[in-house]
Image (cartoon, rainbow, N blue to C red; front, side, top):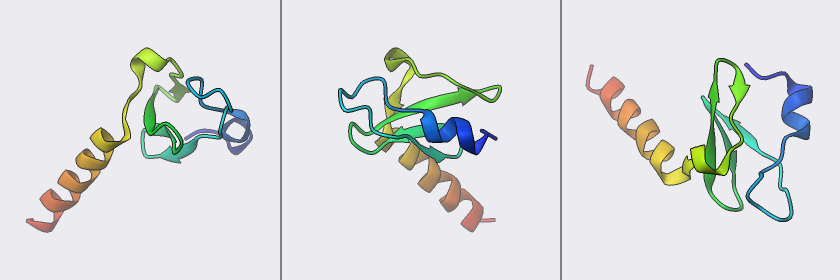
Length: 71
């Protein structure tokens, strides 16, 4: 879990305007460029090369919800 004070100062490294990031599970998400930055061992990895498209984690979320509904 990221400390709220840390989350408050983090911004997207890919966007010129440096919009704030939103915590979604194990990712920090930029709504502007729709990138999701992983959090590994409680450390945000804010490297553009490590980011995944937001659609990819949304797909994973919906897949896990579908799997839990079938049990």
